[in-house]
Image (cartoon, rainbow, N blue to C red):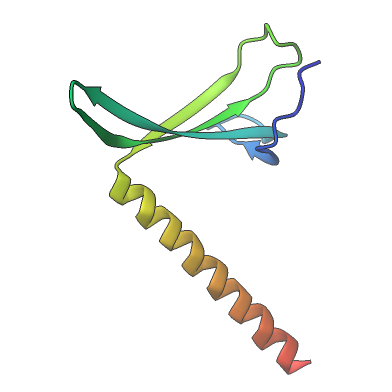
Length: 97
């Protein structure tokens, strides 16, 4: 049995014409640095979603996107804005009660 990653969450996979598959999904993210003599630059970030196999040797389904540093920061800002919007809606609902 593979060990759970600290970045493992409940989720699902839905493919066209297939049944919904409820499972654990691991979210990994890492930065890419280009290193050249006398110069290192941040090239971007990868977000990878994997479905862990039952054994370490099992092949894993994987999906990945690569973001520029600006896209990475925009994504973080968008997630913060969504969080704040949902918190406001929750507060408004609580105020009604």
